[in-house]
Length: 139
Image: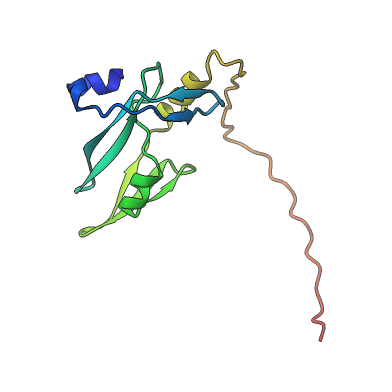
């Protein structure tokens, strides 16, 4: 609800509707309503329905499958990017790895999950490649 109010939107614009949502860790939260807002991405404007929650969260908004499909977008969590077609060619929105990690850690904090920080090593020992044997074609 803080993100909604932060946009300067009137609560009267909110369509009151309670919908159960299951969180990342399995808890169920009820929405307090929904609102349709314009979303501008890469030169494309789309009216998008948002479900509004009144709870503490690390995220301001989560763009779900309806928006992804409407945009014809292809998201990659591995690359922290989303690509979608426009009349001017394929556009790309890149995420920020540090920000994504921070949101994820904030979400897990206090839910009984242990967090481990992984470090990237610059020198990884080279493993011996497996020997490849010759195969005979069977007719």
